Image (cartoon, rainbow, N blue to C red; front, side, top):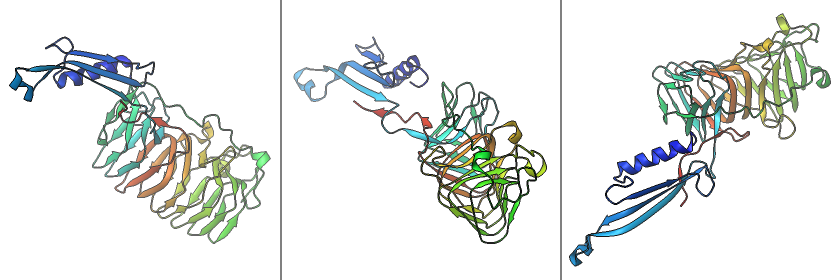
Length: 360
């Protein structure tokens, strides 16, 4: 049905035929209706005809006239959201999994918007598992996916496309920033410290240290957000926006990666209200940040919430467990031999068609 009512009727006729029921043959009538009661998400099948008698044959009755009906939907009450959405409309291998990595999406699924065939690509000894895996119909898939990916007739829109980025001037420079707008300098941290929100001209680099973030919005104006092995960042009500220094867009002010080495952990929580509710990471999709990846090398715990990377590639190369998250990225790459798992968080609507459900 998601691909058209006519295709739904054809599929229903095929399954009826496999069970021995063909309209107009052997006294059977097969009537299939969609939309059903005006609802294009529902389909009704009615089969009428002779049913062979069992005990009644003793009385000379060989057949009864019988009728059965059922109504099903693919769009029932229990919707399934995507945990991973690849936005790029034309990239081949928009979802790219190699090596022996195993990707598991719990309580949700995956959607690829690209029209390039294949848009979903898995190569190697690994696999991808989710509740539902979908791709835009002109494309296709290659590799070990469970369940088998299915084509849908339209791309999934970006629900956060209208979100307004932080105003660097209005937000103001953090008192802890390593540099200013005209002389950006990376804030280097190698010991326990508490940081204030605001703009960090030149970004933040944390080695093996425990860092506490006070509530608020943190803007990396150049330099990125780099966590070394065993760095731990904690706090409540945090949103990190990654961009470039508009007054000094080169060198230390250039847009750089959000990057996590093995063992690094971000255990902070997202903001619970306001324009950035539930968003933990957001990367500027402007040309100045083009080609800048979001990199996870695995090992540590990661913040729950929305990872909004509309112009960036999400790159995972190590063992990673995301508790409750949704990742909206330009493209995805999984490599190496360690598992990646995510539990779908229902923070924003990324609705996938649910499994068929019998309702009458």
